[in-house]
Amino acid sequence: MKKACALAVWLAGMIPLATAAGETRVPEIHGYVQTWWTIREELENGIRQAGSEDEAAQTAAGFSLRRARLSLADTLGSSRLRFRLEILLEENARLTDCYLAGRLAPGWELVVGQQKIPSTYESLQSSTGLDFVERSTLSERIADWSLSRTPYISPYMGNRALLRDTGLGLRAAVGPVRAFAMVGNGLGANLFVGGKQRKEFLYGNGPADLFYGLRLDADLGPGLTAGGHASLNRHDNSLLNDAKTVIDLRRWSWSADLGWALPRGVTLRGMYAAGAVDDDYYRDRRTNYEYQGYELKALVWLVPDRLQTGIRFDRYEDEFNQAGNHVVERHWTLGATAPLSPGSRIQLNYVWKETDEPYVPDLDDDLLLLSAQLAF
Image (cartoon, helix red, strand yellow):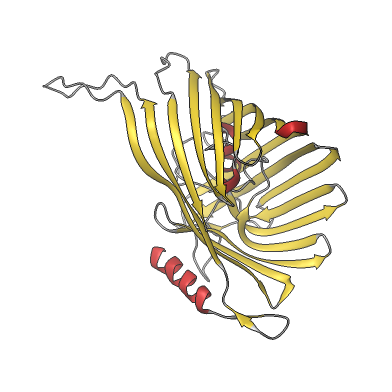
């Protein structure tokens, strides 16, 4: 995969595109890198070396490469057709975005390929423009649970959706309303469906067993916006590519959010979301996993276009197999963002974490983090 992706980018960069005027050009290459400096992260663990009783460090500090992406995006022949190809490089190279989009009419566009799914407002934001270093806990996890990741041991257990799936998307903008509808595999990024002609991750699948998602956003007045999404992912008796493992997927999720941009650079936003993994994997008629949560945040530009500060509170609650044990995670995030140039910036975040889990102590895990982003 890594060599194939690198070759695809190189070839795409070498292919000239025809313009309406008959001229040719090479597609533009863009990308960004996010480097993290973990100044201090509490890591209470109580670990001691067997025999010597040497105590392990109770904090983490150091540097990491959080994100590194390379992309091509351009029009093909006319403004009615465009493409986007993006590759994740910080781990094993994988495709993130890979789609072709065609304008059907003013304000209407059909998108074919691997793309972000309808989800929370923050899931659809680019990582280069987040208000804080990371998305809220709910927005970070909801796509995985909406698609194929399982809370039980299965071939799906480690699947990371990367907020994306492969399928057909329809985007529309009519007056103050924007809509995004999608039908996809329901498996996540780089996981496809194929039978004997070309065996893929999913070998057998019903024609209507897919992911269905819809997101709506609307401008309600000066500075006031509202949005929300709903999704359903159902696969009955799907067959994996080993041609013997049968798994059902039944998932739903939804969210609602409200934002208000006030004078003097102040922005307020709130969101609530919930979902469930109801695969009935154990055949006990219990919902395998349920989750819900919300976030509240306020942002203010202390120096217009130079320095923005903000505070966010997010809460995430989940329950496994209706066992009655609810785990609640609460995060307070204080942040400051200093833009350096379009797409490049420095962010400093302090995250205070609290976890309520039955019979498990809440270990120290607060975090002070500095992120530097370079975009080109």
